[in-house]
Length: 397
Image 1 (tube, rainbow, N blue to C red):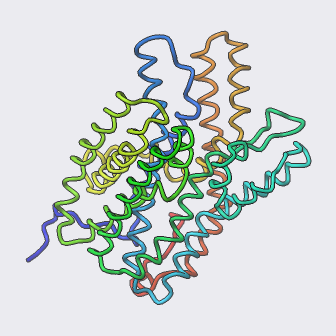
Image 2 (image 1 turned 90 degrees about the vertical axis):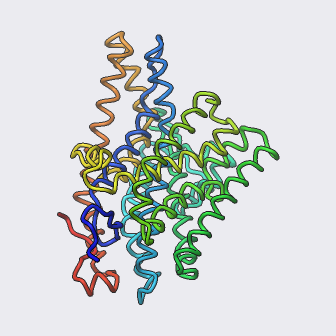
Image 3 (image 1 turned 135 degrees about the vertical axis):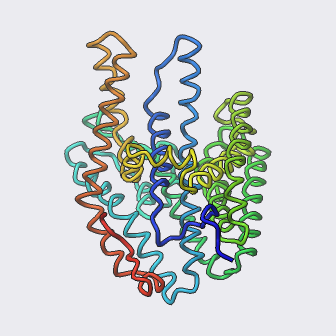
């Protein structure tokens, strides 16, 4: 029987799904506004806007779910590849490492000028383990300058890269060993439940302050965020893919409503409700949004297919790395503009817009003239099925 044209066809790793760039754009935009959109106070509307802005950290969770979705799809589809591990890790390295180590190199070159005060535990960031040391001592998330305080560098956002890289080391062997889709689903669901239980135990054993710093920034407590994406990828590769995809919008609406209720009723950043069930619901809502975006012509697809948000998503990795490195300098710039305009809304608008545009331009230049040179090497690590079907690993188009 011929498959109906309206039936959902699961995404596969060989075909780029452009609307997902829009999801990336939303995620990085949420994080940016969370970090730099403050200062709007003084009335019910502005207070409500600020409350929404403060929840922009959920953009990182959206990144985690999307990463789990795409990576699991690649791993599952290529689990029988003749060079499974070599090709996967080579391609991930070509995407992740160049701009990350470029930033490290630039900071090292600037060290004599700004006299950056490096500390030995910060070397752990070079192997994506810095979150463990940074959680123990939050001052390691900053790189102060001895002579130019405004040039202080923030490293705090790099915890999320550490979490993802650690996931990339653990999940591929699991997919390769288990192989069966149903068993993988149960494994992902079981580990997700374990992650939730571990978060609850943290609150039973430690103070909210200690629990928050480890729960938010450490892989064992964040596995459900990444594995919610994995579960979505595996469900959409099964016989009931069309049914599950149609239900994604209801998952998004239901989980989104539930986590919004937690945001309102238990808004503190170290709230036990928020950091246990709330994180799971945030991941579920993110998975629902991603799934709802996959069907061409759907409202979510049309929204995230808009070119401006797709363009931001295309450069989102570099944008994320660059945007808060010199956050203190942007705060000082805001103070300077306020001194000239004597208006916080005007100063905030000028500072926020300037910051966003310059960060976007730097990210675009980094991708177009630096990162893409490494991405072209993906053609040397094509999977067996790509070679057989002449679907190339990377194209600049």
